[in-house]
Amino acid sequence: MRLIVTEAPVYTSAMVAVAAIPAPAEQPRLKVDDLDDLQASIEQHGFFSSVLLEQQPDGSYRLIHGARRLQAARQAGLSQIPAQVYPAGKFSPAQVWLSQINENERRKNLNPIEKALAYKRLRSGGQPGQGDIAAVC
Image (cartoon, rainbow, N blue to C red; front, top):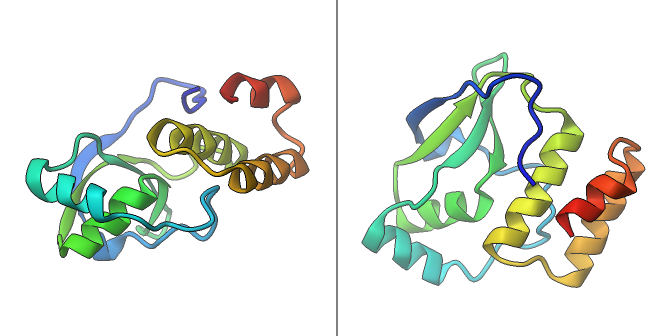
């Protein structure tokens, strides 16, 4: 499943300072660890895909996708990373959460507990229905 947008996606590709991107306050993955292989890959080959950010009204960023890539970049001592930067208000909280679940499943599977807690949180918000959730399972 992809992020659900109401209009054509409009983003800017940019190199963004790692220090300017805070770790997400919440994400489906309970623990971001075991980054040695990802760090080595980034150091050797660079990034195969950009992190996805939403620029906030105050100019700060909210990380949508790429928590493991961001942490591996920090671990590697990189000062900047490639990003797709969307304008503020582009994504609803439910869109972000559902998209993060899907993104984590495509990159490195969530463990069963992380997956159950993520779907529980998503359902507690009341937005996506069971069909939406089933589409990413």
